[in-house]
Image (cartoon, rainbow, N blue to C red; front, side, top):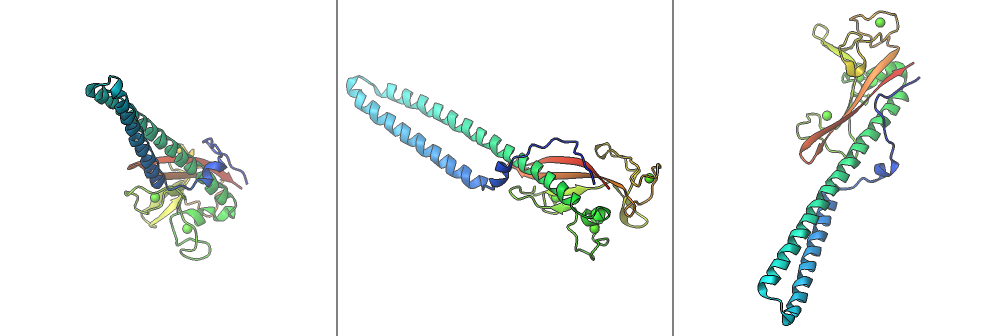
Length: 229
Ligand SMILES: [Ca+2]
Ligand SMILES: [Ca+2]
Ligand SMILES: [Ca+2]
């Protein structure tokens, strides 16, 4: 069995171990900053009040505090932005690592059953209807968009076309999908036809797609690969 990926993956076990609740950490982080701001402003007011004896006026005091607050608020904004960028990077790496893990899971499956095990059709599951993993999967640490109907961030795609006569998704060589390298001779007979090759494929193009909610926006990363016997 062989495979190759068209997208490079940066492996990072450290990121995999950071299953953090981002919202909780962000709130604690913000509380810490706000507390620091109040502490700093209070200290400045106190010090300047003492210096008033030496000649500070109320106007000077107000201007100084205003400048200080502006600077601190700017720093809070910068740190919040930095925090979001870091969280985004962690989520992206989670998605890429999970996509690679899913490809490895497919590789470990019996080759001739990969399509039936991981497609959307439960009727062809090798060990009985509804017993296979199917095409949708969760990724720990990532949450689906509210628009995601199945509620799972991950999905496995094969080169399929829906046959309205048989009413099933067919594994097809004649699909037009450049991202999967299709059309492609899947059963190795030298011909690209419009038959269902669910039971005689020799190579299998696969796309692992992960979509998740990132601050109200849907983000997506994917990997494509071809698994062969
Ligand atoms: Ca199936
Ligand atoms: Ca989904
Ligand atoms: Ca063929």
